[in-house]
Image (cartoon, rainbow, N blue to C red):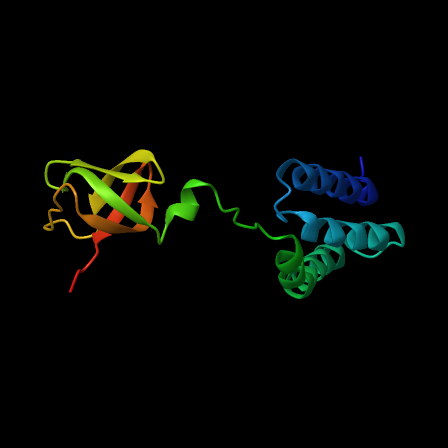
Amino acid sequence: MEINMVVVWLVLLLVCIIVEAATASLVSIWFAFGCLVAAVMAQIGVPIFAQVVAFAIVSALIMAVIRPIAKEHFGNKTVETNAGSLVGKRARVTSDIDNQQGLGQVNVEGMDWSARSTIDEVKISAGQTVIIKAIDGVKLVVEKVNTN
């Protein structure tokens, strides 16, 4: 029984399209183009070895040329969350910040947050002003504002 390579390449093409649709991450679309070229080659009677080589070359070329353009236009865009907008703002320490004991709380924009210092050895007393440097999970990472 002889394997019909046109059918094999078309099935692989379909699998690539399904995977791409399921992930929407530009994962397998490149291989779909390679499968299409290989299927055409199989239809006109080109040997299997040449089909596989063409599949690999076309897939690699499409990926190298189009991927950077596609990533620029359709790539993952970072969406700023409400919490992310707190970075750079000032907050008031409402409970002493001590990284060694895992304690600390600040109030920013009327909301209380757990907080830790950017430097483990630095303790920040309640009532002081800090600047929010980052968010780590559900804690704000803060740094004491110098009042020089």
